[in-house]
Length: 306
Image (cartoon, rainbow, N blue to C red):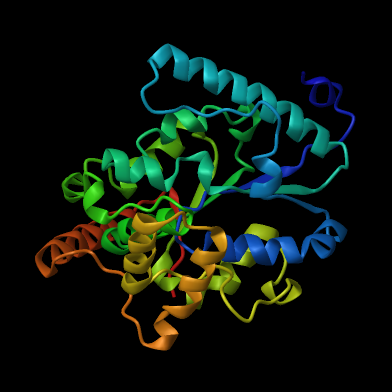
């Protein structure tokens, strides 16, 4: 391992690492990048998106209920796999490599089961190759209002076939905010102290979209394929209710989920999914605003604002 880098045969590319987070228009960004793959390659930009990233044979990440030693071994194995795969990609001599993969830091199921925001991010980030810790590496990260983020994580699990109610998870733990967005930023800093972090709020993405894509690719957003609609429609409260009720009567197929998502959308008058009481939502909203005020004044972050 490391033959290409040790030989100096090619100029080393700059890396752009889009970590998500989940439910912050990540799939939308990845879809635009995927549809623009040919144009980006022509401009010297190689994208590595979830379908390819998750297909790397032998790639592993830390899991719940593993010992510290087991998690360390998984991180080392993952690092070996990623190093090999990215060195192969570097052989095409791109000027930059853009990796967009939200599952590097965790997943929605972990968040709802533990009540913590990406509690294994630091350990999972250890699977990244050591050379990503470089001043030319740019990390991109969006954050979102906690109440909407947690609710969207649950809706996404239901959409994926995990047909359980909000009350089936220990969701009262989410109110504790044992880990917050600052903790995720700190985990990234710990794993990649030399890299630069660019951060924005999901709530501002409609206004910031062109700027975000330009920074990720180094190309004007107008050069990328446009989308008329978001690729992933959100489940409403009615949609979740119908799917869970259906699951109690019979097996639910992917076609059933797609049909109910289509029939119960907000465009047809159904209310968006919001499992919070007004009091709990207000507490989470206040925590989010406090976190945003703290993050946006940190000098080592690039904060994107409208």
